Length: 136
Length: 136
DNA sequence: TGCCTTCATGAGAATGATTATCATCTAAAT
DNA sequence: ATTTAGATGATAATCATTCTCATGAAGGCA
Ligand SMILES: [Mn+2]
Ligand SMILES: [Mn+2]
Ligand SMILES: [Zn+2]
Ligand SMILES: [Zn+2]
Image 1: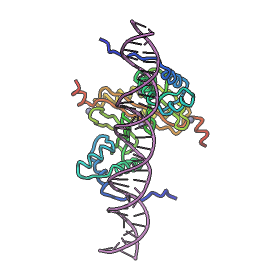
Image 2 (image 1 turned 180 degrees about the vertical axis):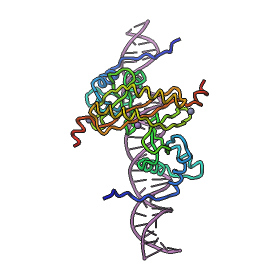
Image 3 (image 1 turned 30 degrees about the vertical axis):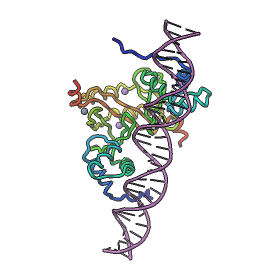
Image 4 (image 1 turned 90 degrees about the vertical axis):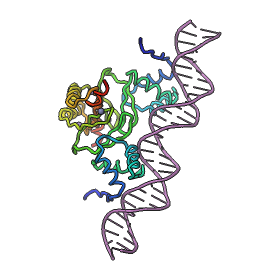
């Protein structure tokens, strides 16, 4: 038997959040999305923002990362499969990265230590070209 | 001139926390350390646990990671320099990992994208040999 | 050993992100 | 149009972490 997925409804709120993410190019927190939607007129309840982002994340429609301050941030990535990110810690500019060597390395290390079912978190943070220049 | 470091005092509390970390072999949260110190008789205020762990982290005496639930966890590692971790998500068993290929990869990726001042977070999570076996 | 200055401590309040409630609303099927 | 399983959102509740500030105690020095 198949797992019964509850039916998903198309609501104004979900559309607003989805549209927002489609146009954003960096990671945003639930609080930021809530605030910016409200500022744009498409007000959505904070709880709904959290719930929707959680659902979209579980469905694989958006990526979630933890900021260095420990908050969850979300982004709709162009790359659909497994990948990582290079994020500017100044302006938020985000590059999507795929890395065969890292994938292979993780697999090898896991095997060497007798670990199974190994996942990895790999994120890069730095200053993008523009922000590096402005930094002088 | 040298940066003025405020003087660090040797207190019962700092000794207790340091001792605790010296004997623990997996990552522990501030809350856990506070609870376990209290259970062991060496009661230390929660605020002091947080402050001390923060100080030790800044001094490089302990490593801090974010659990997948977003909490900060601390560990005194044997490896002193930069390294990563392979953690059992079941029992907490932790292996320290150094990875030249990952270091080189991060540097290369940063350069390719024009990023400077790039740091990386790399953590592996899986099931250790023992927990894998018990899982059957 | 007995002060003194400065740093350290901790109980409790404050903060802030995230989650839980639950009465009310509504998409969508019939 | 009616029905119903979902969805929403104002609000309260959680919970880790930080802040306050009155009190305690290292460590230097006489
Ligand atoms: Mn990967
Ligand atoms: Mn590294
Ligand atoms: Zn930038
Ligand atoms: Zn294990």
